[in-house]
Image 1: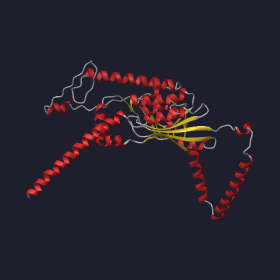
Image 2: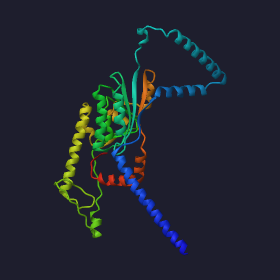
Image 3: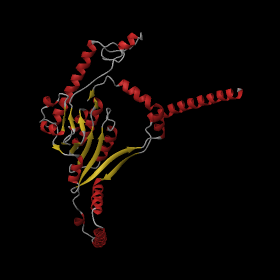
Length: 352
């Protein structure tokens, strides 16, 4: 029994030491990850035309009889041989003959928006990559899905899209499911907005909500103290007693943000009756078209299919692999970080 007792103490000490080392190394790695964003980043290009062609060929091949499939394969081999011979013959062409007009390019981006508009970081790199090579004869198609979120996050996302417009490159935004509030702020930057008939559009309003635990703390005789410098450094709070003056200040800030939101949309879509639609309501795509919130009822898939013969459809994706330090940082501090951010942002206005 004494041996088991000593072994248990030893095991407990060993576990304590291991856990302590993990915490220490986790903190170190977290610090390194913050100072240096490791991991390789790259822009991936996918030619969507090829995907459509493969689908077309696969379906066509599957619907043919075995005899027809053999005949088609034979004709294809003949055509490939003939094409190879012609290419060999025509290698020596004049410079003027070799110069052919380039096909229009449609650069396809995806944005899946959360409350923090987290995809903005990837989108800014994708836009920068496009702007290094695109011209006014090209086009950018953004497939947008977002129900809105934090004002400053979606403001930055809209500003990134404005870079495309500033370079005189046509911008089309397609909404298959939802572009509401902050999502619609992004959408209205486009030259043209496409929307599926039952997509959710609009919700031009501002929201702030925060739980208050003051009475619960008071009933349990728990004091909450908060020090600040500046009369309006903090208005509404989770744990302190909220005053009418603080509520009035928060309401005034929301109204100011709403006014700026409406002015932004009015600037982007001057023909829109902004007072009629800026009530915080949302509409389905068909009604949104009537109100002038969108331009065309069409899905992004139909738009791509419509343009696949006349344009190269290039899907752009920015991907960055997380470094080993970042993965460890996420492991040790991820859950706590999310909790802290959620509490810290509770009193900030949202475009929702």
